[in-house]
Length: 265
Image (cartoon, rainbow, N blue to C red; front, side, top):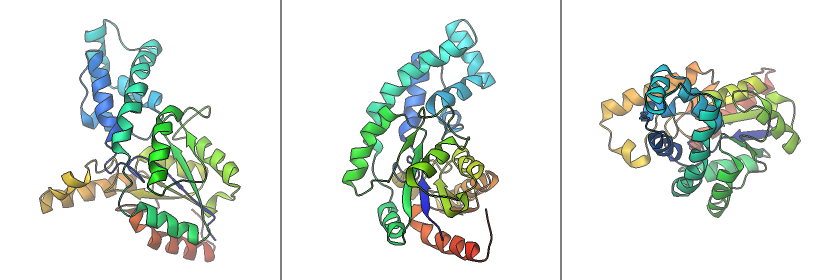
């Protein structure tokens, strides 16, 4: 009964731990004399990158640090200056973080075998995705569409990128679509579009570590961080939360059963 699954990119299908943008945000702000933390940088993750920067600069601590370094509180022109530095830096960095997440390609291939179309939306720009697409394709992942930040009047958490995806894929109604994402605003994107939503906790922004860092955690620390990641995505309104896309099959089975019983998101 499901017609499509729509996936985010970083932290969902590529780049375990959503690592690529973090260092770039920190380095970009550093160029303007402002220190931000990784935790601060992760807060708005999933938004279009200019919106992400704008949200960071609205944080009282960051705004005051900007004023101290630049002589005035940040305004739209300041946001544009940071964005102009960030995008080319992210374009260069992203290629180093394009490894597909373990199990993602087989899981997506199983969805295709069930007859689902595969859509994608992202907070990355077209120029950044131009670096990502061929690297993902070489690993066996080529979705049926791509909608990027900046393609439409609004990005996440609005539903506009999802609406474009419905049109691109020729799928409707919304309850026959599943949105899979690792961020709160990505989950909100699906909810606002009326789809089922699935949060991925361990591979993405909510957990925030790569595979090696995750494997090195003591058992108690791992358990606490996993519980926090699950809670974060649950609070965002996700209908389901799983460790990674590799675990998606059982969720799809459950949604199919709920649809058969007449349930809706």
